[in-house]
Length: 556
Image (cartoon, rainbow, N blue to C red; front, side, top):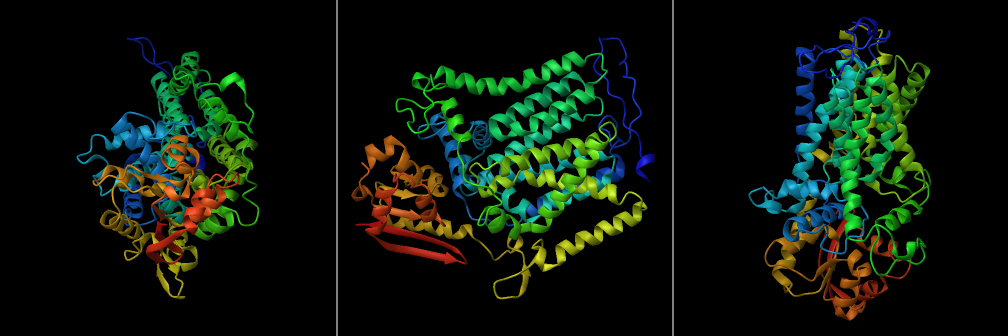
C-alpha cells in the first residue's frame, strides 16, 4: 500500500455538551503523515506492537542486574529515594536543588509498597533497575504508537522500536537508574496523548500534566516544549473547544512545576540572600533554587565535538552507525517537515524535538556520558519514519524483506556490537550486554561483602555513591559512610564529621574511575584532604576485570 493510499487520519474534535454528538472540524486536504489522522492499530499492528514489547523485555531484561556496572548517579538517585521513604526528606544531605526531585519521588513511590522495599531485588540499585525495565517497556509501546500515528506505517513504528530496543546505546543507558529515562517516558506519554485519535480536553490536560512531571523529573525536558506546543496548536486548530484545550494544557503543565517552586518558597530557598547571584561567592546561609539554576546555566565544559569527549570515547564506540543514521534521518525529517508543514507535521515534530535536544548536548555546558540517553528514542523515531519514506515506493513485502535483512546484518556483523562483537582477544563473541558470563556488578557485591566482614560499623568511610544504600539500608548499618562528593562539599559531613582532616578517615572505598572524579572535582582544592588520606593509606582489598578496578584502602 503506498503512502498516498494509506487510511486517512480521523478529524479532531472535542467534547460537546451532554446529549449532543461531537461536531467535527472541517478538514483541510492532508496526507497520512499529518498528525490529525491515522489508521487504527488492527491485527497486524497489534502483533508488531507485541513483538516490539517482547523484544524490549528480552534485550533490556536479560543480564539486567549484572550489566552495566553500578554507577555513581544510580546510587545518588536511589539514596535520595531512600531518604524520602526512611526520613521523609528529599535528600539525606542538604538538598541544594541540583535537580528537581520528581525522579526520585517516583523511585520512592515504586520502592515503598514492595515487600522488602529497596532490597526486593537484591539491593537498592537493582530495585531501581527493575523499574527502569518496566518504564522501558511502557516507553516502547508509546514510541511505537507515536511513530505509527505520525507516519501511518506499522513498518516505520517497528523500525523505530527495533533501534530503541536493540541499539547498544539504548541497552547500556536505559537499564541504568537515570532521571533521563523517567523524563523521556513522561515526554513520550505527553506526545502520545496529543496524538489520541479523538483529541479531547481530557487528553490535553493529561498531556500537559505529563509534560509537567517530565519537567520536575529533569529540567531539560524544557527543550521539547516548543514542539509539543506546536503540535497541540495544530491538533486543535478549528476545534470548537480550542480555547479550553490551549488554556488547560499549560495549566496542567504548571501544576507540578508550581508545586516545586512553592516548596522552595515555603522553605525560604527560592532566592539567595540579598538577591546576590555572584557565582564566585555562593550564598553561605541557605541554598537557593534560582541561584542553583543560574549556576548551572553558567557552567561550561567545552564542546562534545572536541577531542576526548564522550562522543569519541563512549558514544561512537558503542553505536556509531546508529548515531550517524539517526543524525542523517533527523536532517531529512527537518527538511521534509519544513518544506511542507501542512502535510509533514510528523517529520516536523520528531525532527525539531531531536534538533532541540541535540542543541542541548552541543551547547557547551557540563556534559555527562548518559546525557545521550534521551536522544536514542528521538533518533530511533527519525530513522523509522525517514526509512519508511525512502522505501515507500517498494511493495510492502519487499520493504519487509529489505528492513529484515538490514536488521539481521546489524545483529550479526560483529563490528556493530549489536549482538556479536570482537573481544579483546580478537575472537567473535556475544556482545557485553548479552554476555551471561560478564557479571560486572558481582565485583561491587564482593566489595560490600568484604566491608561487612572486616570493617567495623562505626568506621568513617569515604566512598562513591553506588554503595551508599547498601551500607545504610542493610544491617550492619554504616552511618559514617559518605561519598567523596558530600565529604568535600557538605558542611555537616566535611566540617563536623571529618573536620577536613585526613587523619579522621578510616577507610577509602574506591569505585571504578573514582580517583579521576576526585581529581576532576578538585579544581578549588576541596578534595585535597581526601587525596592526602589516600596517600597515607594501605590497600587491603582489590579486584579487577578488564578496565574496571575496585579497591579498599585502610588509612593510617
